[in-house]
Image 1 (cartoon, rainbow, N blue to C red):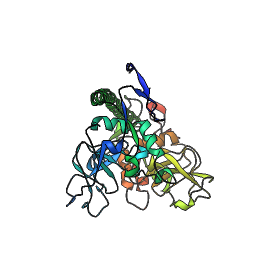
Image 2: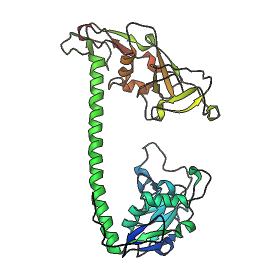
Image 3: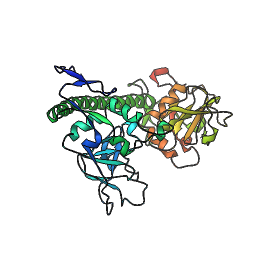
Image 4: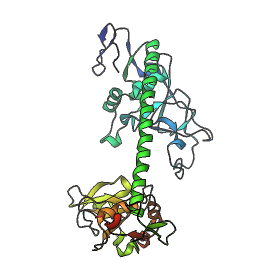
Length: 375
């Protein structure tokens, strides 16, 4: 959306800020913010979290139900945060780890907490200080050898400068951004809903094809398996252990990872990607092999190996036995179906791949059968 320019501009005198509207000023944070250091007496307040994605939110809102709120033995002595306070994770300010809080709560003593004074509106400060320009500015004044070690200390932060519109302008800018970001957030939510529906439809199509075949008029029979129900009459039932050779991946230590290693390490539990390389792995996967996460939130979500690689102890890997009855592309889709995905969860917490004992149907492509044509 285009915004009309102001009538006149002036040089701010600060290189990274550049020109600003003539009626704006330049201020230092030490004149606009007051550091808070009030501490919790009992740790009973709501524990807050600060991140690039959520700003300042209750920690309980962004963790899984089975995770602990914190590893700390006690929250006594944590810093108190009031609504409208600016909270900065001094180790992640360079990565947008700051924001203005809407909540009363507490944060780690390692964070910095500031109360905005009258010349700086909290709603405006939240948008301005999380913008790309300010984040780059904070990074330039952070100290540390590498990004993960960068810190911006309160006394340094308070000495930095910012563009300072008059309060009416700050209020108008914040209201404008509330409206526009609200529209964008609504569009994002709608797209996420549509994506979720499409994923459900995708899984339903896969499930129907691999368990009922392609011909809706094909004669059916009882499979004898409760979760599977009826299958095409010309299909047979077999154990996956007859079709696949399966085992757990290998333990890989951090010191084994080398930048120029010959074999990429595939970890299905970490987003279906390669996270390092090693030499001379015990487990060697080929393109077309299948890996199934054995722990974490991705249990049962089958991944197809795209190139020669190895995998970790967090996954089960499956190699198709030589068989004319099954092909790999079909074998890949089968465990991804709505019917079979829960079977993958059976492997959680066991020392070996119990999934290979699951019974599955298969048939040829004649008469509209699905034709276990997976590979």
